[in-house]
Image (tube, rainbow, N blue to C red; front, side, top):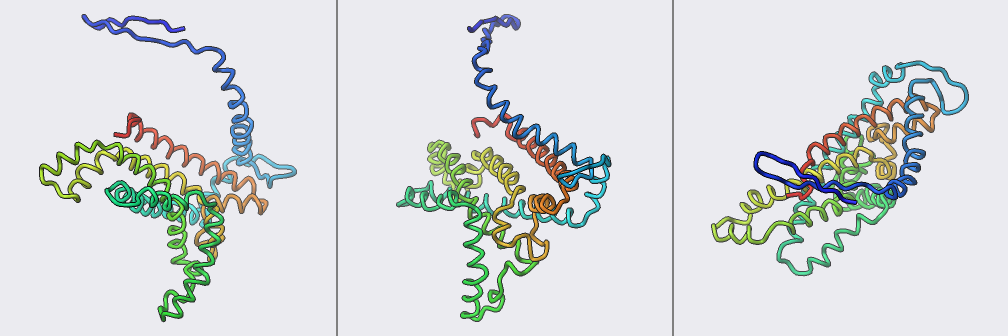
Length: 303
């Protein structure tokens, strides 16, 4: 049932339609709501509660208030994991978006075999992250050092994964290699939405391809850039499988992410302490989500 009301503003009258929601739609929503509550909300609430205890995951526990949180912010291992995760996420977001945007520009230009090339570039996106990590682990640990020895290149003779100062570079490279295709597809959709008449007018005015890219293309796909940056950053904050397959968090704890630190604590009987860590991480993720909503509000048409 749809009812129509009339809004009077001065001398103008504008009809407004308000739709009544049928009860059947709430019935369809109910199973998903129940499953989400039981699988996500309830366990999350229980975990937050136990972050205020000294529980090891089983057995008896005592309520200790904010002790875990106070210790958390003075723990150098925790602070190192946050520093690495945010630094890694920022570096990977920049690398992914720059390369993906350039590939999207190339694959939407007037080149031959662009459909086949798009298919090739998308392949990494459909491969499991842990499989990719183990393959690149072999390359970084065996193939590349062997090639470095054969060519006499000293810095290539040892694995990057064994260097605590450079291991993060390998992780950024492999993560970007898998993430670029998805980001590229979004940029391709944005570039294809730009009217061709805009470029025709720019050609008539004598604008070069570089000027068109900087002054026309980038401003018109700015909404896609914002979405790719924020979604990418949120995704990289949860980095786990590729890091496990490449370095296992090493050398030492140089490449241990927040997710790895939390899971290692759970397995080591440090349940309540790492649950406090997970709660802080959850708050950080919520703040980033709020930022995303504020930046993307009103950009539904991505123009």
